[in-house]
Length: 398
Image: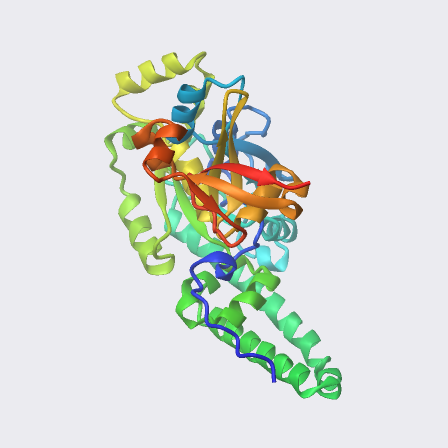
């Protein structure tokens, strides 16, 4: 009889929803003309994505790297004065606008939904400004209506996906019975999981908002299915400059109430797309800082990037020295050898040991020598789970 599966905390390691990979992406999703491509341009600090006042300006998804500002990285650079610097980034995808009926192929629905399936987290871009010069797919501005439409379309698509999977699964019942009792038991467990998922979706609940009802086994199947409503999300609220600076807007409270009711725990980040684009057009960081000071406000871009990065369970560890300071991106839950494999694939196979310093302790003590003197310079083996902010030196065998 196989050993009983150990119960695992579904909030950590591979038991989180989502792919167990470092190559994770977030996709910007919203109705047409809510400001996705303008936000994309600001995040990428480029102007490669088309912007226009017409529906479906973006058809093929664009992809960029949004680099994070990180005071830990800056401190290591100041300490080691390296010849080369490599910051962490999150990959952002600009996806075509959705309209009601997308799950049935309306507008660019089929392409839109397939592009969402290819990303690991969703940035819902909501338009919270009125402007007669910028048309809206539904003629009026109502961000709660828009996000309700989008989430409904995602659930409808997931229901369709799960019904197809269940039909295919039913065809394998006889084969599972004929193999062995264990095979059939596994078949029954997956069938019961499929029923639970359909029950959740048909009750107008997203998979990610039903975590208390999923077992570790359910999480494994859900991560296989990659359903649209299982992806973590955040909400980027696009306001006009006046409302953004004064932090007031008639749409904010209804959005806040909707998110708390339908996506509890998800981040909400107000910003002004046109203003952020103006900031990126300025010639230098000094000019941007001066303009922000004059306007008595701040940019929302780094908060947006950092939140998206952690939303898909990514963390950083650092390698640091006079040749290079680099932030390495890994999925939360990686063990030391897996993290070493991000530096070079051979390092995972030839891993011997990791010399580890927690960043906060290194900053407190100042140097590696002081860390050793304080007993804070640790040697970790294959079972060590890398923590966000670790500064690591790997020892690799031949």
